[in-house]
Amino acid sequence: MAYAIPQPAQAVVPVAGSDALFPVRRIYCVGRNYAAHAREMGSDPSREPPFFFCKPADALVPVAAGQTVALPYALATANLHHEIELVVAIGQGGVNIPVDEAAAHVWGYGAGLDMTRRDLQFALRDKGRPWELGKAFDSSAPIAPLVPAAEAGPVEQAPIWLKVNGQLRQSARVADMSWSVAEIIANLSTYFRLEPGDLIFTGTPEGVGPVVAGDVIEAGVDGLGSLSLRIV
Image (cartoon, rainbow, N blue to C red; front, side, top):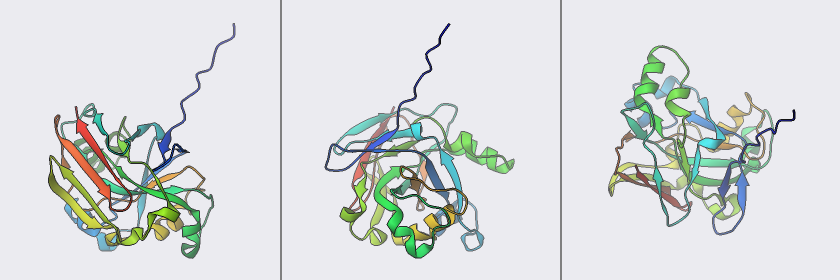
């Protein structure tokens, strides 16, 4: 008997201002890349080189401009946190990429959220176990449309922010990152061969905190758009 093999759907992110879609291969995330956030998580930012974890591509929740998307409260947690991040989309692959060549590998940028089951993350961290249950769950990566690099402007100085129910919770500049986009790409490419379609969530500023059902999250990176979510 012949059996049909299910074909997984390709994860894609809309491109701002067009009908184009950016096909996603992998999602890499940078941990504690803003000094103030590292401190609020109980770490010493002066001693920690960049480190990485991953989310599955199907954790993405594309949010079109001007829409508010219903985001389910995550399973198995009582402490779901928001984390706004600059997202870098890779357009040219490579390995051991020099810092001064990293910009040529960037296709574009966007704003995304690294939603986190904080209670599970801390429990795993305290036992020295991987973070997947705290980070790599369904719908844990909402993302705004991507902006091509040529249209993005000076991303390094862009304000990055997040509001819950209209109240500002996270506010910084991309320049406050401990490791720049170029440094992140160079470092990450020593561990993985980066390929077109990879997304890098570059870390979050201080001010992370919990959300509950009914809360409305508005977040973005100036010049790259924003996204709006209602927790349900």
